[in-house]
Image (cartoon, rainbow, N blue to C red; front, side, top):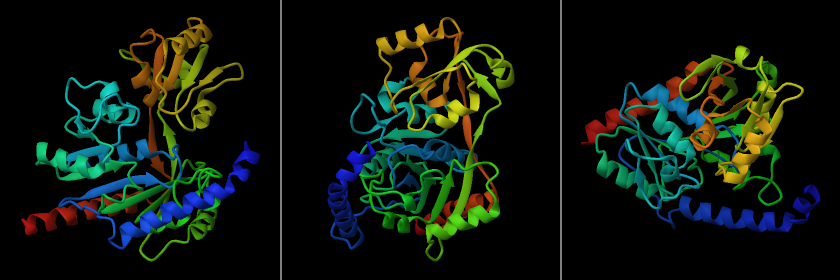
Length: 345
């Protein structure tokens, strides 16, 4: 695979040139960019998947939802609906996709909308829910037709963008220069014991421009696992035999957190829609034992596997330090933008 990626290097150069020209046309005004008269926070990355966007979006929602009428706007990857869709009480996972459905299930009074075209999505969202005060956009860093107000770029500790290459040689959707559009760069999935000196070294490699902020986060696994009608402490749950199932981009940290020497770990592609064959495989491997999965996978597996067997383990974004500075940056941006909006009207 590594040899193939090296052989494809000329195509990576070509892809980089095409995306670079496209981005430049947006930034100089050849292609139209649309902004909206309310705070808009864009969460994204330069690489393909697996940087922790979902827990970061949830972190921001928790920060804002009790103070502002908050909405999220996503693409709704692998959903079975088309165009704009606004979730309501009857909405299913198939209609909006697994991540938006997770937001929809977890957060009351937060509007959840999906549309591959973010400008169209925001326009329709505000037409239907004009009381909306802030929109958090999930995975929209490359959608330059939408001009966000605050950009948060995520990159993982194990595979930072400054050590990566363009597709198909590497995993970058656009060149490293794209990081210059970010107001905040967050290095995610760090070891909990990452020292301040190590953080400083990584920050130097980010080559922050003036005004950019950087932060370091880790995955905080819940101490409680949940089923549809039950909850149990993880320390108690793992005393018995179980299998682990994940259909996310980088499941290794999830597996490593729970697995024992004899634990069966079943990995599927990111956003995987589980077929009857997959379910049969999982049940055969489980042999009546508990099945522990991620929260994102749970919304796709619920109803397909026996309810008493299926548990999920939530995760949250946690900051190694300076969480107060991150919170203040978000709250100050939203507060100032909201005040300016009131003055404008």
